[in-house]
Length: 126
Image (cartoon, rainbow, N blue to C red; front, side, top):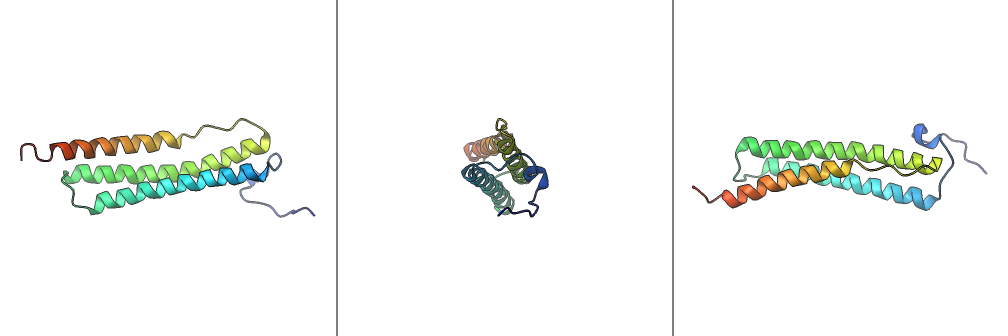
């Protein structure tokens, strides 16, 4: 028996043929891992915003904003990446690269460097 109900999103499921379910489920697990990463970035932003750190308030709020924006970008690219990968599998095309990795690494490196410098210079001159 064939299921004729339309599946969402049609832009993904309306193309090609169903791949091996193991590949679709692996793609979904990757999507969920990226969503968890986005949530972790948002939690880090909330923590930076709430804690009283030995940073200039402006710097602290900018770092929190950077993490929050990165979390949002990762969430959006997780969805887009899932859809692009699922479409590629359905059409037998090569899997696309994931640009969210650059966003995550950039945000983590910037925040890590600022926090490290702040920690190292906290006692200097004070």
